[in-house]
Length: 96
Length: 479
Image 1 (cartoon, one colour):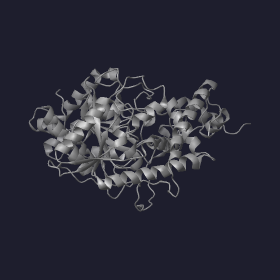
Image 2: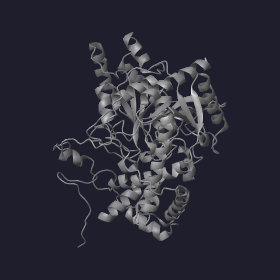
Image 3: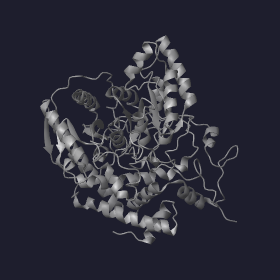
């Protein structure tokens, strides 16, 4: 399964990344190289094997769901790149 | 200031009245400034470290000091400490200040450890040479032309260069053990589910573990006692995560140890590394341990399995960096979509973008089963086989890395070559079991390299006892 330029565009769109044409060349080359490399997975017979998803195989240890105020509004705004006194500011979403 | 190799020596000097914590911290800060060109620390927490040192000195006088009193610790730049900056060595988090402390930091401070600063690493812990940091690479303190390894390259170097007593790093595929190997230090990746990941900036959540790098097994043992254990902020911790031990046992029983034929006879292995591993195996036998060769037929699949699953998890974990709530926002953005696109594209470095792209691809419709699910199935087989071996044997021994530290700039042109750096270390992350790198190898040219021991899940106690014994034996032999 090789990757072409349109696949790179589609994946970049999904990943919310953009690349210049020359960067795309590099990404295309790297992705194909890596996909060739991971082809080695197909040498293993996994018929009837369950995928391993959770590393800790114990029953979930749940705690009481308690409402806590851990971060104040002021703190939450602290690292925002653009803000006023109450809100995080974002560029316009709707076009006029 | 003299070089301290373990906390006990520091405590002895404090008890004898020839040292206090403030002088100790000032001594380390002076060392950090002197070795500034190695680019090991991204920031020294001078004020908070000295404040804590004063507090600990007072507590020592009162006799109320915690277990870590006198231990000066660096944290990798992906571990959060309230009121301090943390960036994962990325431009996208430049200037970000943590609103809370990671559980490990809280536990360390509670036991009177002193956190001296944050260390450089590969961006989002993705790399094996520390060359992927936005803030420049780290130079190996043993030879400045060489890499210290990665991703916890700054962490290992901070210990090797005597800039602190112990470092916390994180290990997703070998990121503690490989730099430990390259800098002549000890590095432990604990069992998955042993140490809370709360406040560790996530790379691949089913692999990441925080662990220590130090010069002595005693200090590794002590810090594990402090940082392990249940945490209501991390539901993946095991009920076996409490590490209650404080003392190491000097006499270890006869052990059964496996070595994997395919590891030792791997085509990429350096002959000196191979010879040393064989020598260690021979001396283990002469000490009365049973060491046997074991088959492992999934070697070629380890790194591919690792890359499919970790990139998938990374693409999901790194979706939170959107240029909106925190971190870098592009000045070139003009609407919401371009805020995402440009902030992420300008904020992430090339290796991070490469992995997000691969991860997004293997999770996308049409490829999910062929790559992601397939890799998860192979991961189960890797774990099954690893557990089978560790049921029959106490440890698996191997080199930590196929070779000693390589030259800066020599491997970063070919991502796959760099990924194969992890060939001996990823097995423990795929299977979840603990592994340690011990600095008992040295090439004729004087470069260190590590020998790795793996144990079964939550067998850290016997792993550390045995490691302690092995290191002492090799130290005796040298003397």
